[in-house]
Image 1 (cartoon, rainbow, N blue to C red):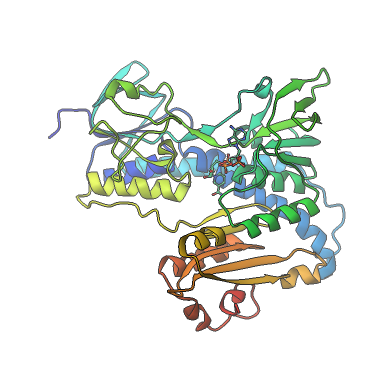
Image 2: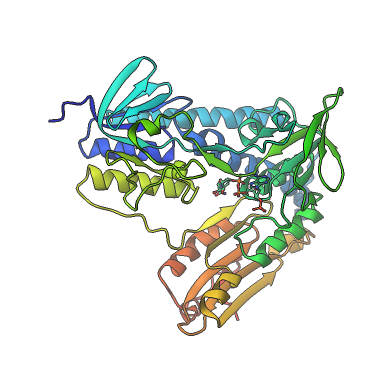
Length: 446
Ligand code: NDP
């Protein structure tokens, strides 16, 4: 029996930390978890979950317009931001409560407050010194804000969920996941949105044709894009407006939101006291068993800056618990991780992009369906979906799949099984279509 207070002390009650804590406890470990903000972490409190609810809310703007073509007379449809905001925040509170309950049910001790590592087997929470055989760092990441003068006048996605009222004009800095998702949401709510990025592209890493389709549709919806536009400075005007200075000239807005990546939360965590090394971005360096350079300290999730996605953090937390306390050594398989952007319309991808596949295999076949979904046709909505399946010519295996269009993330999740399983294109062809659906295009690709 250990002489220390706990077998496991987890710092951070987000997706990775909560999974690791509750599974370790279920394996019989005595576990404590410390959280300085709210149980649930980024995904539940100020990320995936409230964002997706805002995306649902925003979609009604288009549905209400389309409804007329389907015979519905919708009168006096008005959007009320405080109603949606407060309902979303209430749902977040409910979910945070469920996470808390799960920890309680598994007899995990919860400590409110900031935990700091004081040695290989010790942490301090407030004025309490606590010892543990193993420490898990699961502190996640926070939004990066550029350090140009005046950038402190901007907000991040953290604050976007709490806005008192919607701004008339919003600049969103960044061209990644968060920038495109929030640009879609606020644009549907009637905010005049301009997305500005330092480079000449959006969503680096996604298939070029899919990104281009999102750009075209977003512009048609009224979102403006300014590329090659790093921010030189931001000036707060006496009126309260912000003037954002960029090489192409200044632009005035009522709110500036930064979505310029996320940085690991390791500052002030005391990691040096235990010899835990961090990389140049501040991420905890770990091996394939999630172990840091200190043998008793592990890390999972965004704080390790491997793949910043909730389901990956959860797998890492599970693998950690099974390996250390479940007597079942497990490694996370990072190959073929599907991902999605909940833009308007959403897009999703798995495996290699067309460009990556050409580099990797030389000869590839690209099968594509470029079509206007049935609902969009009747609605007179001129938005085309695009599905791409990338096949290695030599093995005929599907090495990548990418799509943009209504429900693309839902459809891609299922197709990802085929890609992960290494199926051949001919095996998609063997499947009979479910008609009429959008997904049937995947088994009809020529
Ligand atoms: P991303 O990494 O997706 O995008 C960051 C954007 O900001 C890029 O366009 C990049 O430009 C730009 N950028 C990066 N650094 C700077 C800088 N120093 N100054 C100015 N611009 C900069 O980050 P997000 O903030 O959008 O999201 C963070 C992470 O959260 C994502 O990587 C993702 O893993 C996760 N996430 C996942 C979601 C999902 O699964 N649907 C939703 C939201 C977040 P460029 O690359 O063009 O040079």
